[in-house]
Image (cartoon, rainbow, N blue to C red; front, side, top):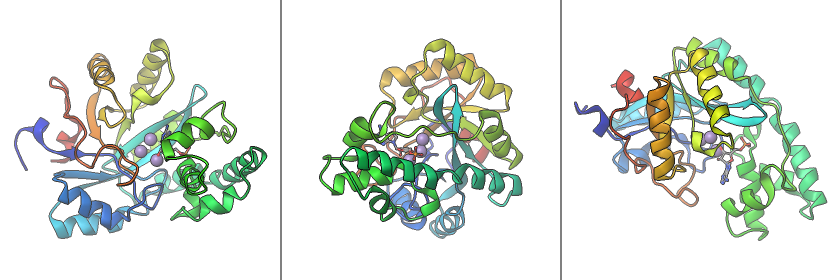
Length: 283
Ligand code: AMP
Ligand code: MN
Ligand code: MN
Ligand code: MN
């Protein structure tokens, strides 16, 4: 492992077929290795079932691997994602908590399908489920892939803009985990909690600060500063906030698919200087 912590090619956020990625855990690990990633975390949504296969594949390749998860949370009326890395995937409270978070997905999917049918797109549930490697994790991404297949939109990004976000016809609000609960599950499983892609949330600055304060107060330790959906300006903004809140900083591509992700595994911008890389704990 290289001594310069900042220069290590750490990619601590990615998805496999266990949630809404298109590559199996093994294929994803092989791709990360081939792309030059030196420290890799698999962080499927609300599920740890891919970690064993990923860890085995990483061990075979000599790639340093960190077990992870990305938990769906509802905070102040919005969905916020909390990544946990370095977790013990066998921790009973974490496993039980994640099962509870997953449990509402099929009901939401049915409601989304009903809403899409009313908007002129019948058959969406069957369509989405055909894309879901794991039906318990049926996600908006699977609906988006099906709507691209039917020709309703040109790509997944367009489907989200036109159908699957608040105010659009296929959007169904949902209650995920509590912020404090998600952080407690991660910490209780020996992991480090990280606010994922903070630039994605539609919070004003005061609410954003309140989120980071509550997160840190709950035992959260880091914020994802370098992520594929941050502009350079957002990266600077969250670097500043990380320092202000004395949070460590993470870097992750949030890779889902070679066909959909704009940023390749390991290619997201480096962490700005003067931040504490959260991966110091794992090297
Ligand atoms: P869900 O957990 O079912 O609500 O789906 C959330 C997932 O949808 C995220 O993890 C992303 O993979 C994807 N997603 C959310 N917003 C967008 C967007 N604007 N463009 C493309 N994918 C998105
Ligand atoms: Mn996703
Ligand atoms: Mn996310
Ligand atoms: Mn993600």
